[in-house]
Image 1 (cartoon, helix red, strand yellow):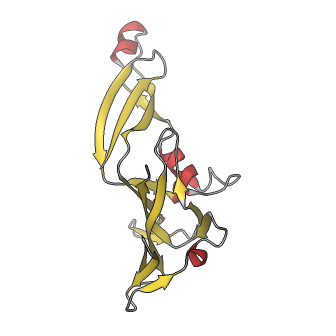
Image 2 (image 1 turned 30 degrees about the vertical axis):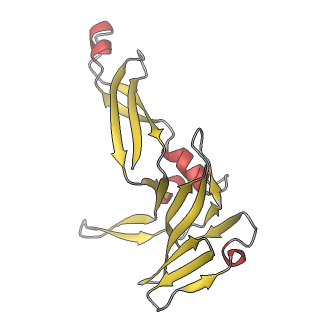
Length: 193
């Protein structure tokens, strides 16, 4: 899995409030939260991973140092910084396309975002190793799933309709290096050496 660390730092005095080690099996990229932030940018996998690792703020938190030094009791703002401490052999990215829709009875139902995302044959974010796209999971329609997987001899499509079907790399990557897709849900990148 991915070994990550989360630092929570007081923005008033600079004290590190918490440093947590986390192990997780995928990086969740929430498309619906970032679509507005990326309106002026290209919505691509690299930008989505960078946004997932971007520092964020938590309001109305406690900092003992600020309470003692500044007699502040109303709460402080913490900067939360996530970073990857150890990059995995296989990087699994989940593109969360859920959009919450509040119902009349207070229940929340979900629909999905059809935002197109640019996928690259390779991926490198910040200080990460270079990764090569090896597989992707697509969802088209209501219940038709397909999994495209790279093999040494090419790409293959596996789906509910029947037998595996060979795909040419030109079918998947018409621009030679990237693909724009609105049905992709999961991406599997393998570390290259």
